[in-house]
Length: 114
Length: 113
Image (cartoon, rainbow over all chains, first blue to last red; front, top):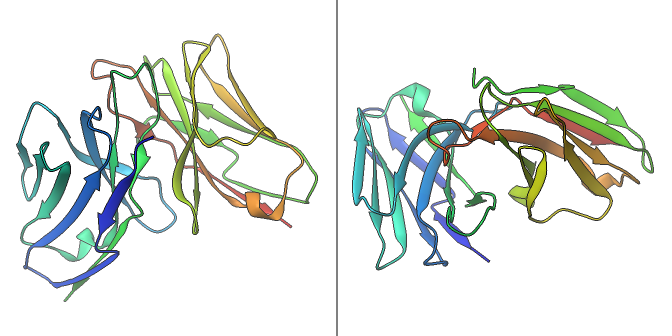
């Protein structure tokens, strides 16, 4: 089955700086890669996603890049703000495999220092 | 608000008991996924239903089962509960215009004492 590794487990950055979170996956059949943000005690919230036919996608201060050859994808947050503090999860999904659930990384606790 | 609802919000029960968690997907979504979130295991996929039929199983214990009803709401049944079953249980739904995207409900926090 799929295995997703996520690094770092904790990331502390100064407000206004950029943050980068990296994930690798093992199953080359995976073709959909969402990122979720989870605040303490709340539900995971989908913030951005990318499909395997695209190398990069941006949405305001958030961008995701995908390298299919190396099987890794990254989340980039620019101009970080205090409200960006949360746990971020990457995930991988094979939509062509019949059906299955998301395989998640272990999460990155992002701390924005004022 | 994702449009996915879950009840109850909190559940406290004793070892050996059985509980039922309920999930209503977003309007128009046909797929319901169940996930378990714990500190040691992270977020793990349990089971998926699509339009009333089981589609995929993940790391779901034999003591756990689920079903999806004709109105598309789903229930996750957990029996012979153990202390280690204490976790957050989320359901997610997908299957609207962009079928890949999964939207999570607020979760049910289960505490087994």
